[in-house]
Length: 197
Image (tube, rainbow, N blue to C red; front, side):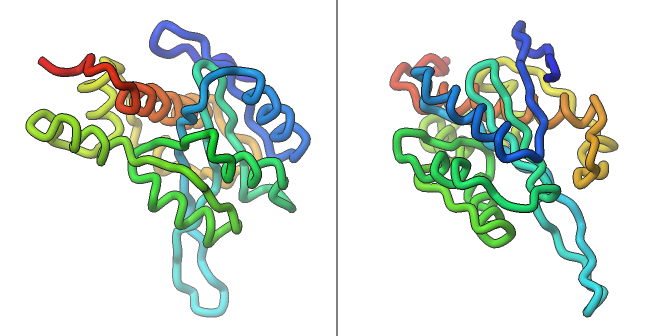
C-alpha cells in the first residue's frame, strides 16, 4: 500500500498484477456510495518482432474513487480478472477522464476490456463552459476547474511503465492522474454550477 499525499488528502494506493487484489479493491467500491470512477492509463512502446515496427500499448490502468486508487499492471497479468470486466460494464458506475474514449478503445483492443458508461471530462467541461475552457490537458483542467496543481514530469511520463516494480515517482504520477480525473469528473457531472465566474 502506498500513501500518496495530494490535494490535502492521503490517497491509499494499491499497485498490483494479482487478480485477487483487484477483486478485493472492486468489492470495497460497492460498499461506498460514490459511483464516479476516475480512469487513466499509462502506455508503453512495443516492437513487433515480425515487422520491427513500434506500436503503443496500455501498460497500466488506474482507477480512483475519492481517496482510494488502484493501479493495475495489466501488462504483467496472465489473465484479466472477470471482476474487473464486470465492474467496468456495471452501468451504476461512470468512468471519467481526459480522452477516455481513446483509452476505452485501446483497453478493448489490448486486453478485451469493455466499458459500459464513460465520459470525457474535457468534452463535458467544454460543453458546460465553452468560453472558459481553452485546453483539453488534464493538468490545465485540474487547475482551472478544481484548483489542483499537478506536477507533470516528462521523465516520469515517458518512463518504463511495463516494469514489474514501479518507482515511487511512477506510483505518485499514476495515482494523481487518476485522482484528478475523478475530482474533475465528479465536479462536471454534478448539477451545481460551482464553476461559473
